[in-house]
Image (cartoon, rainbow, N blue to C red; front, side, top):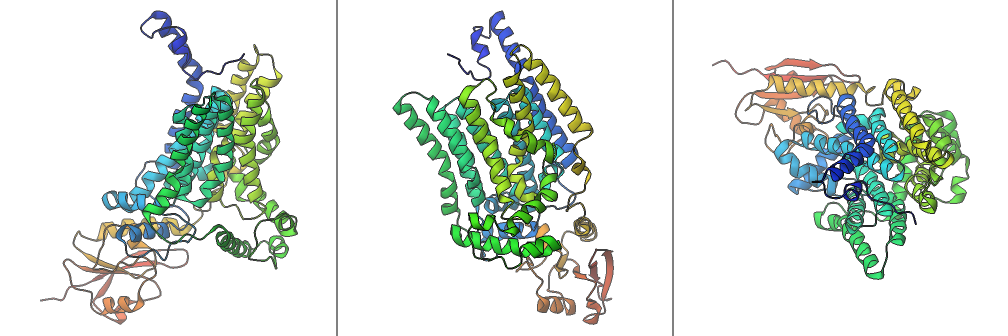
Length: 540
């Protein structure tokens, strides 16, 4: 009977590590694992090089980042949560809020996203190693930072990078458990899924792949008591999801039906903003209150939406390109000399979530932040297909050598060439307001002294970016400026130490209220400029 050993079990085959034979076995085992470990290390390096992971400073990225940081501050200070989306859970804002009070909210969110994208690299490498081979794991890990938006996600100030990391870890730990059923791997799989759930209800997308991988591992275990222990370990880890939602508080979360209806309304509004005539015509008159169903997925809107997704953001999120990924996807079902378990794990860990992602493309627009949750899956398809295809079809003596050559060739192509879509700038790189915000922060930090007072009436989310620092008496300006307060400040700033400053846009000149305001700096923007005013002191 074929046995499946844990990587590193070769240490034990040669005896104690203190013996020469044991040390040789250890060196050989490490050499066998070197490709995926090297791939993870290279992935981390390129994540720093291409995505500026763990670089604190620079542009503030992430769709609607100011709303995420604002809610983190509001939940941390208990001043209300009504402005947070009613389908998002409180775990991310509570983490950012508690870290942000010590590090700064922007730094805290950057730190979480950098750690999360690093975990994406690790999860891809580990899953590729377990499902395929060390070479497959190395190529999968290396590919993560070569998706432009995934590298960029290390700087997103939103919950999507942590959600992607925990989702990827569900697959990685689940694949490990399917091969080596241990209680701590069951606990790790449940914990990853629980944290995904705690971050966002979309984390439950990985419940089906993770659950199937757990069942495969459970079948391999022996004895009723052992299986009960494994199941309890999974449930214990999974319980962190509902426990965090209940214990951390936050807004009242909508139930599944209203969440789907609300998200559907958002998608239909997004469709109109695409300015794509074919898509708008096909989806005109689509009902807003409808659950996904076969009849809806057969309508012209679903087909046109799917075609639109494949031709836009979705194809840029695939490290090896759209055509190779789709053509090679069925090969993940090849057993790779692992029998029915190879077919089952390939289907549960890669094919099923890939079909889920493609199915989403029939119902919603797929911006980069939605596809990011499946980053580990999209990174696994090509390496795992190559590994399993060669190991299934070629002789045992030849397959490993050709696999190594194929993976090295694919790695060279990935680093040096890559798919055509990789050269296209991301939406955030094309957004001039991102560069404007970076210049605004630099200007404010350069001009203001420690004790100076500033009121933001520019609608640039300046005060959110400076949290937890406050430059005036409460309340903070975290949403839209209070026009009455802005006019009062322009006429006579609220008392306090230091000099008085005012931030406006170009549509308003505070000198109409008080001629002592002097323009200190101006930052040009695509739609409106940012103006920083200094109140000139009265001569004695």
